[in-house]
Image 1 (cartoon, each protein chain N blue to C red):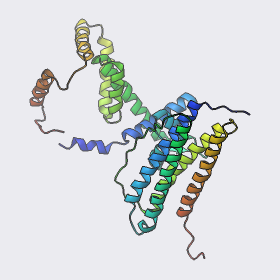
Image 2: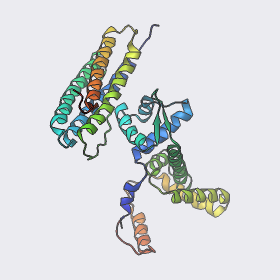
Image 3: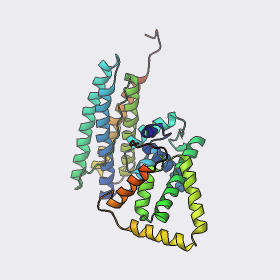
Image 4: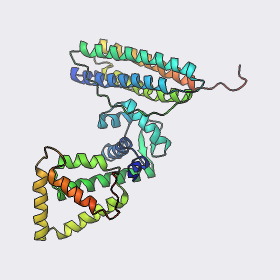
Length: 182
Length: 150
């Protein structure tokens, strides 16, 4: 399998994703965004921000005016909005369904927000919408409570025996019949 | 208008500048290795000299932090790739982070100008002058003389 190569096909890197969403956040919050604002918000140097923005400007995602104020192009806005939406959905999935503490859910969502496909994000959204509709069902409530209890216990090592056995069982059931690591 | 900058605020700003200088030094070192082509003969030397100067600046900023009773605690986060650069590309890249450092010193000067801290004000003013010169030198290296222009 060559799925890991997909990482290199992503429209934006993790760092670039943070730059785009930060510019959008600053524009929404204070009405303007400068290199120094982005640097302060991300806790990195102006030099690092400037070097990253150079690439984003060349790709037509970020625009800088004569007063050094930053904005996003239409495509930049679309990418930033997509990443932010994915982050919210994944964070909600981890928190609401798996019962992972909000702080951990946020950190983990941040790690994958720019990596998952639009299709998986849409499916996650659909799942969460469906979940809202059936949350009154007692069996679902019971399942969710069980999951949340498991998630509340911080694992000492990963994977635990049960999780490892489950992964092996699932791997054998793989409909693709592929058993190589991705 | 009389301004005021607290000691904590000054140390915080100097630590941010220290991070700028240290990152710039590493970037210069990296660029000097990655520059290729015939320009390498000249550009590598320029980049190495700028690296040495940047390290000196970092030392000066560290000293200033210590003089103010603080601790140098720069936050550095660098992710450098293995891209090769032509001479002009390397200079253009250096210009980006030199300009960022200059903006940082200008920001410090804006805060200390008229604050009564003459030593810090003088330091900021001096660094703005030095960094401005660096930026101007790099800009001059990027300007191509028209063909036939003597």
